[in-house]
Amino acid sequence: MRDISAAEAAPDSIQAPEPLQEPKPAVVMRELGVQADGRSILKGVSATIPTRRQTVIIGPNGAGKSTLARALLGEIAFTGSALFTPEKPVFGYVPQRLDFDRRLPLTVNEFMSLGRTRWPMWLRIPSRTRAQNRKYLEMVRADALLDRPLGSLSGGETQRIFLARALTLSPDILILDEPATGVDVYGEQLLCEVLETFKKDFTIIMVSHDLAMAKAHGDWIICLNRTVVAEGPPRDIFRPAILSLAFGLHQSLLFEDSLPATDGSSHDHCHGHGHGHDHCHGHDHGRESEPDGARARGGR
View 1 (tube, rainbow, N blue to C red):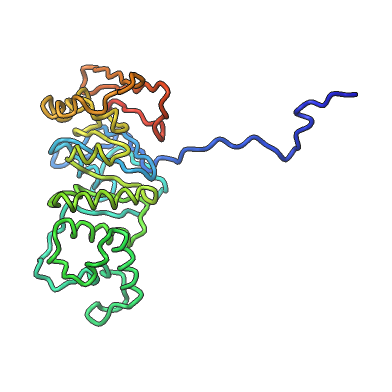
View 2: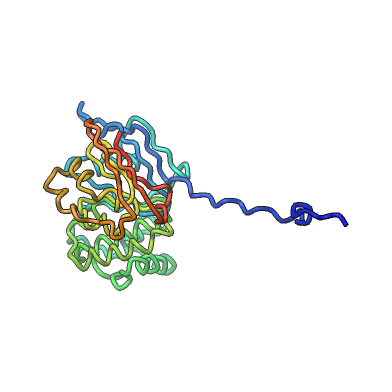
């Protein structure tokens, strides 16, 4: 009797499963630079923003954080490159503030309807548009504000209305510039909870000076000071060796004991090169790897 090998016995239709593919990065920046009035605002910015995660851009005042956000939005010219997936994404944008006359007789429903109806708003807002507005407001836990005057809202309520308005565009990438500015503690907590629910649906890019918020809610951190000091997951960025390069020694001391290795299985090696940045190489022993091959990298 002839022996049948396993290869001969296996049906032709059975194939080894394809390896799972990580999603493409939402944004890849290479040597991005911005100049204004003859001076360099950003220089040699190279970084990657992962898809459907929350990336927080941190850095001191004047580091170019908001300028980088505006460059990605296409509002200002830049050198270098920024490649997007999809190639021409739809952006939703929540500004740090929007100056308007708070005495303006404009309700939240009317604000949400701007540019979305064929009829003048003073004539009527279709019931379908009103229902859509309520749906978007429910997503940010603000549906009770639908008929409130826009000028009567608190800072946190206003930011959530701006966020709901951005969602009406069905964005691929959601950019928020200092969303917690002028927001009280409860409003900030509510905003963060809302954003956590969006991470599986949108790529979120947040500009923030609030290091505690970035550490608690960011999946990927870009530490910026006119160029990229480092990028990676929070546990690799919130180290004195990294933060001191961007914020100075005193600010970095706030995180001297942050994210300690409790079992001796995790540590980072940060190597200073004496030219304005560190290379940090994470070492994991028995710990799951970060998504998208996350590793803090030295600025370029």
